[in-house]
Structures are given as structure tokens and as C-alpha cells.
Image 1 (cartoon, rainbow, N blue to C red):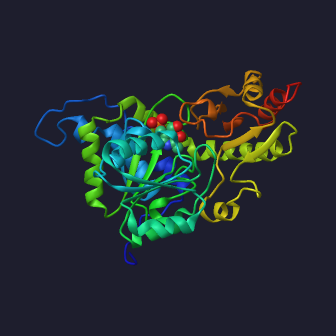
Image 2 (image 1 turned 120 degrees about the vertical axis):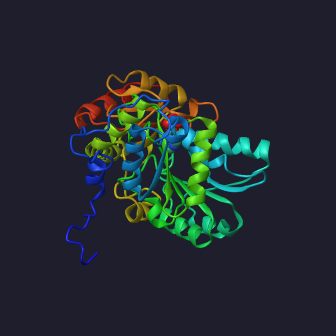
Image 3 (image 1 turned 120 degrees about the horizontal axis):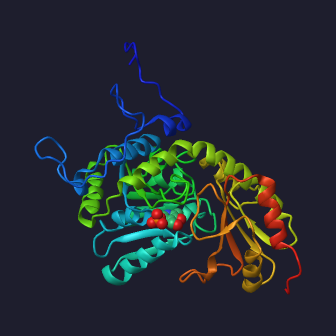
Length: 379
Ligand SMILES: Cc1ncc(COP(=O)(O)O)c(C=O)c1O
């Protein structure tokens, strides 16, 4: 490129989030419009959107693909994106997953175990050596870091690099980190996966997902696209437009949510009604050295356990006035949930509250938490 008078600048992630995937022809709108098409006039390119996509979806795929350094394939939800990877596994496949991961993944691998004879190994996210030891004997490595809901952090760079060296498929659910904090493909992962429903969308008003496939992994890219076409899990035009619009402000939202989360986590650790706080930004996080090395920021999720039992934790949640009791996360508004109440999550600590910290004023969030946690509750 030394002789190129106009080299393409390499932008930082915040700039890519704002600028990638925009139309370039003069006279075009700055944002790719919502194209609600299934059918196209035949003979000059796209024919049917379930297989060929639409401009709206291509714009979103381009933007996330550029951010992650691969090729984006958008889906109708995070679970559709996740399932596209697992659905390519054969009968009897050997899979390694974290022992703390999003419950949808837990359900998918249990289903594969029962129906398709998959050999599933569940390892602690933080035990890097055990992951490295099994890489040569599995067909797919599935990582999630930070994990949902325990916020465990794994050595994504080391495990992805080892998987690549061993030519083993490796997928990372990057939903909690976001593409601004972690880029698994840079380290050798085959797939980086997002529920775009969460931080990318950012407003709790859409369902969407995306798999970003590493450059050069052409067979895997074809296989992922085939799954989307066969499963019909193509994302809607409005949802994809909103997801891309959400991406434009992700750097700003994440910065604010993350700085709120950092202070709230610290204050919660000193609160008399809180027995344990799990937040990757706290020095006492068990993987704090790995956090510093692998993540650009500790994220906007804070999980904590309250003193007392499940009933007193639930009572505390009913007192919240600002923070919403809700199961999803990653929006501008703060949400909280006691995770052990969910079917299949009974193994979690009974009072574990997983909070998605939003962009409200820090002190309003703290006042709300403090008043809800305090008061006279039987222990
Ligand atoms: C880490 C993680 N991955 C994937 C998903 C699934 O995404 P969706 O709900 O968009 O299908 C979720 C949903 O909560 C999640 O938290």
C-alpha cells in the first residue's frame, strides 16, 4: 500500500460502529432504508430475501462484520444464530461448553446429547488449562465470556489461538462483551456470535442475532448461510434497521452503562444486605488479570447475591421503583432478575440478582438499589 495515494484508514471500533455499512453512492440516504421485501424482479441479482437478503440486512451485516473483522450473517434472534452453528454438528459430535453459559445454549447441547448422541463436556470458564487439554479431541469449542449470569471470564485469546492451531471450530458468544470490548476472530475463533437483541440493539425493542465468520472460513460461512436459508431464520427489515441504528450509539451507551456498573458494583460490595458481587471490573473478580488482558472494558452486567433467602430477594425486587424487573438486558434502561427462579436455572445461588446497568443517572440507580436492599427483612 506504500504507493497508494489514498489508503483506506484503519479506524478504531467506536468509529467503525458509527460509520460502517452506510451507502456510498452520491444521492443515497445516509442510512440504508428499511426494505420490506420478500420478492424481487428476476434476472439481476437477488430473487428472494430468505436466501439473498435485503439491503437493510446487508448493511447491518457489513457493519458488524467490519467491527469483528469477519463476514456477518444476520439472524432473526440470538438463538437462531446460535442454533445455526450447533445445527451443523453431526450425530455423535464432541462439544465443549462452559459450565456457566446462557441457558439457551445449555438447552441446545442437552438436546443434542439426548437426540443426536453428542458428547458434551462442560468446563469451568476460568480453567484455561482444562480447555487447552481437550482441544485436540473435540469438534466444537463454545466459549462465552463474560458468561451469563455468573460473569465468569475466560482466556478467549489463548483458547481461540489453540483451537485455530489444532484446526478445531471455535465459537465465542460475544454478547456481553460486545464487539467494542472483545474481538474473538482476531485470536483465531471461527465464529463470533451475538444476540443483537441486547447491547447492539440497545433499546429492548427488537429481536435479532448475528454470526460473524472468520475470513477464509468459506465452508463454514456457506454452512451458516445454508442453515439460515433452510431454517428460514432471516431477520425482519424493521428489526435489522433498528439493530443497526442501535449499533451507532453502542459506544456511547456502553461507556455510560459501564461506568455506572463499575461504581454500583463497588458500592454493592460494601452494602450490608449484599453477600457477594460478581463484576469483571472489581479487583476481587477471580479472573481480574484475564479481564485486564482480554477485555477492553468490564461491561455493564453486574450479578450479586443478597443476604437472606430467595423470598427476601424477591421482596427486595418488588420495592424497586426505577430499575425494571425484566428478563432481558443490554438496553438503555436498567433491568434486574433473580435468575434461579427460571426453569433450568435452579442450580444458581438462590438470591443471585443479575442486573443490566443502563444509562440512567448513577445516583438515581444507587438510591433505588439502596432503598430496595435496605429495610427490615427477616433473615
Ligand atoms: C449471552 C446470550 N446469548 C444469546 C442469547 C439469546 O439471544 P436472543 O434472546 O436474541 O435469542 C441471550 C439471551 O438472553 C444471551 O444472554
